[in-house]
Length: 148
Image (tube, rainbow, N blue to C red):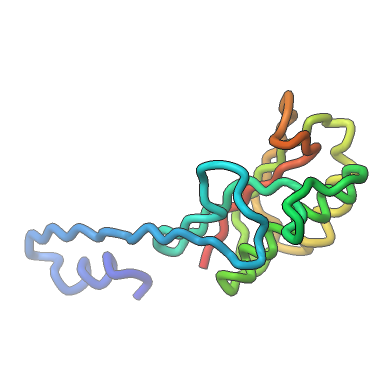
């Protein structure tokens, strides 16, 4: 049996039954993450899904944007994503969707090289989008959706 709905269908198929399931919204604020730079949370869990806010290359030690090329920035971004996943006892293997925002698509290869160090198999679906700008002047932002 895969779900409560399967159970109910199996055991109550001849009865009219209306059941409403209310999933609880849980706010995630990992201790090892940099402070949010706006009115948002690092992640929100609803049911068996974790929606992570876009992470930029902020050093959690001092709250400053890391300096360096796209590889350095992508490394910091994915370390920030990892802090959220670790907090929830998840790994990059649990990620089902990622969205990468780049201020310059010419940086795609460098970003992808670092990205491939974190996502090594059973890759998530991914979108990559060029944007006009990112918070604090970052060159890359990555958001993910993970499944428990």
